[in-house]
Image 1 (cartoon, helix red, strand yellow):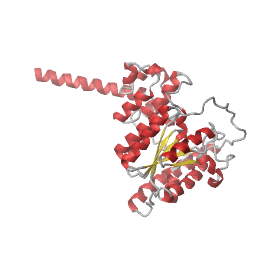
Image 2 (cartoon, helix red, strand yellow):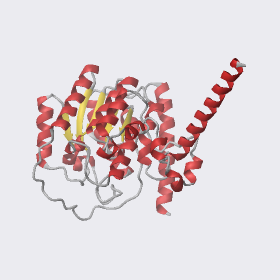
Image 3 (cartoon, helix red, strand yellow):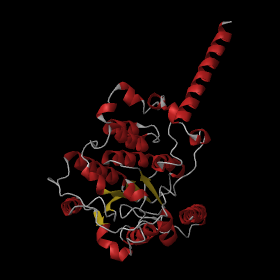
Image 4 (cartoon, helix red, strand yellow):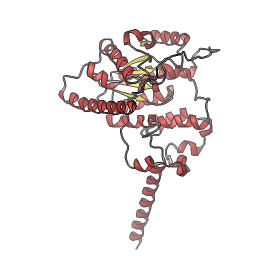
Amino acid sequence: MKKKSKILLCAAVLVCLALLWLLQALLVPKYMTRSKEGALIGEYYANAGGNDVIFIGDCEVYENFSPITLWEQYGITSYIRGSAQQTIWQSYYLMEETFRYETPRVMVFNVLSMKYDTPQSTGSSEQREAYNRMTLDTMRWSSAKWNAIQASMTQEERSWEGEFSYLFPLLRYHSRWSQLEKEDFQYLLHRDVVSDNGYLMQTGVKPYTTPHAERPLVDYTFGENSYAYLDKMVQLCESYGTQLVLIKAPSLYPTWWEQWDAQIQDYADAHNLLYLNLLEYQEEIGLDWSADTYDTGLHLNVYGAEKLSAFFGKILSEQCGVPDHRGDAQISALWQNKADTYYARKEAMEAQTTN
């Protein structure tokens, strides 16, 4: 009888755990039809390994660079580990995690997040937490994820429930019943792939017409915390023999102040790093702000991203020594499938945009 009771107890526990898992799967946001940025970090794991170049950063990487263009023109294998409002500490821990899966030849980091020295205080606490979760929720569990959580939590989240809600999202989303939509049931047990190797495609066109006015800052000095994480990136990449390349993507807003640019250039010179302010190469890239942006210059659309990637791929190839894999039949077959998916997505989105 004791043995039978233990079996029944174990079965009951397993059933309860399964029900809790299903409940959590139902209540967590799906990021399939809205806020697709929240799906990006989790999509990496099915593509980990064999990437010579990894991009790390915020929307200025996942909306501005096309890995398919890098492949087609230069045979470069790459992936973008980007997420919305990604902070420099999140970027560092994503870098650290990436080295658990592969050792790329080049890590490309977009430096805009240097302007945030601590977790952001602008916007509501709900908005700040939402951005954190878009990066952290779908990271696989590791010390890198835990450290990223500790570095990222808002003041309002700092409680035992807040911390462990990243481990058990049901603690955070248990009251989301009233917000459930069709997609919550449709994607209960699976997710569609929303990106092309981390690139989130946009086909719309909304021209840049007038400058985005911003007030000058009182202090342009990057903070100690930002520099500390940049130092950690340098040390991490050096320990794996990976070249760290710093970039500023060619977005017209928010303003990339000259004082910020000078600080990054000085840092790059002091640490023997390649730094490219791509705003200075707009003519060479061939950017047309009346056609190559979908949001008046904040980000590029697919047409601008393809131009930028064609330009940047030459630098990766010639200055960074990233090899051309188009002569490898196995790699070429894999990337042909990726390209087919990319162009099918592009065609479908273009058709939707024009209708």
